[in-house]
Length: 236
Image (cartoon, rainbow, N blue to C red; front, top):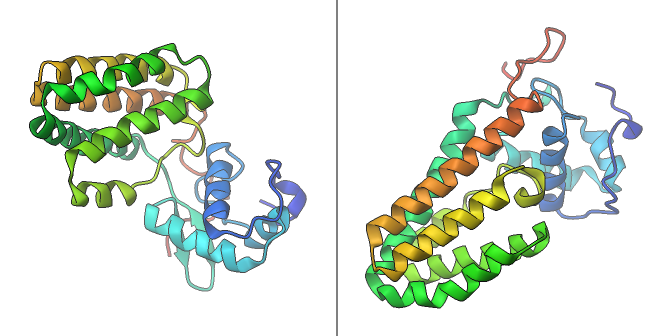
């Protein structure tokens, strides 16, 4: 891959100065297939494309290595790691376990009243017609569940997890909006019955199903394909 700034899309972003923003941009390049498995991340080109120095780029690469997206090799650079189906499925399975635990704890603490309180929000989710509104409403829904669980440890664990889809999952992944609407409706029904274990199961089922949809999308994009022979290896 060339190291020219014109080889990278600008994504209509200008003068990003945050390592977090650069991190999201690099993840989108991987998602869009601009950066493929085994390829070296062109750090100078990324910096030029976004109009930033290499400092936030290096910060982003360190964060991406912690998340498993890339491997940094001393004196050689940063290389895109291989992505596989089990890793994607594990990601959503873990989300389901964490949020399912939160739902169970929340119902154990607040009983059926929690379901009654979340029902109006779930109706808004069911009626949402665009991805941006759905993203905002579901964030409120899941945040309310975590808050009701009253578990600082759970909040900290969720903060350490990052979305595997760079952007609005409801816009980018076909089928996820419908799955989210079905899933939150089932979760609220269980909560209204004060059935903590059923609420937990419905969360796991919903997020596992979303993982299946993401795997289907990634497979269709060729994101699970092994790097070509001429690509740089992502290991010393």
